[in-house]
Length: 413
Image 1 (cartoon, rainbow, N blue to C red):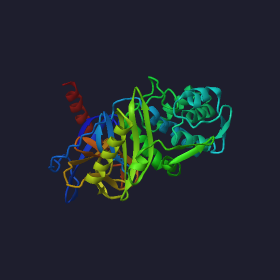
Image 2: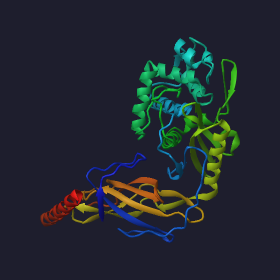
Image 3: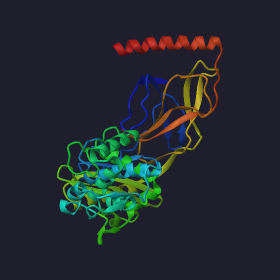
Image 4: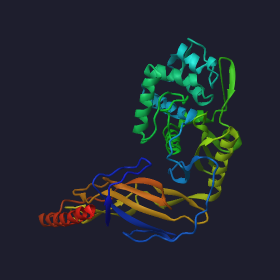
């Protein structure tokens, strides 16, 4: 085993306190070889892809495997793409039974003037002082990108936009989105409206996996309200077979952006681009990146469900280590030409103190494609480990004391 200081994964993975043990797994073409501190397979030079988008990310939806990224952690104005966060807060409230689809919210004068017909921006054209059901406000927000739709939801749920923005931020943190900040419900210009394409992609993936019925709203092509029919603003829906979401956005501060998703041959990809100079540019950038992903990658299973994938060191047990496995298959998108360099590591806070029960969470397995984390999943103990003898516990304590002294000395160097 090797050890290192605790780290925090920028994709919202688990952060382990204390010392983190790392077991390296060699991934070869002939299968998985359980090993510690071994080198990994050589790899062909990866194909280089370029995009005109200032910030972009492409990932496979099921595993969350990142296929491409460019400035993916740069904070930018998300514009109307931020409405995905508004939608998630509403979906979550409905799921919890806090509100119902049939609840009606009033279109206040504030909402009508700032987000409705007089505003000149995207709107569902809800009439002032009218009452609109939540289910229609959601369609107005998602299909027509209605600023009035989002404001009515915010006022109906939280009383005002500021209070709703606080709910958005709190919910984002619950979902592991540590960098996003929100000042309103609709993405209209404000210096505190900031998101990264990585967190937008994570949010899109969460929505489609958590709320499959609500996700269908993003693929609806048109919506009529107040006798005004409007088409979905997401041009990707008509540009690619299998496209069914999610959201476009534009502000002068953020440029043109798009969060899109396409399913082809059973594989779903999510793309996010932001900072483009025109609507045509954002569509072209998103489409080219999706086509590149489908053309060059395929899903490969690295570890089967409940397959033992390695060992974690145990302290004070009747065994010096415990075997670990994953509950679900670990799958990653890899280049079809075999050019990916993959490294898998089991990361846990250790040694793990006995006793240990079967199924007990131990840590995570992280799979790197080149320099980027492609997928991360929790691992658990496959068998029970009982408390060891007094002599065994004393021996482990002595070993940890020596190792701890060495680590402290190394840390001061």
